[in-house]
Image (spheres, rainbow, N blue to C red):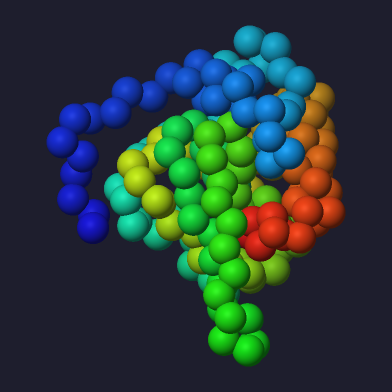
Length: 163
């Protein structure tokens, strides 16, 4: 499951910018950033690839990392107290991990790659650095994530995607 990809993926923040700009669904991550701000944000994030089936987030874990999806799709699922599995799919131009990022609570769902994915991550430490050095950019990022959380909480099937 952790085998290397046959062809190395190239990462450029413009791929994420394109994914965000093309996602017009209710599950879109919609910050209002300039090209310069996107380039700056990229210096605080780490890109990586996931293979199909690879887990990104484990239900119950205490990690607070935020993930932005450039390409591919992620399956979000959890088992409730009655043994029922709930599922949401998160695609390019959206995010996962924002729930724990804000609340500092354990992850409430498991997230894994449905296929090969390009992901950008932002840790709480790097977000703090961004906040101290560029508060306007950090505020715009936080507001866009807050908007995403709000839309997911209104949409019952997408509530599970608040991880």
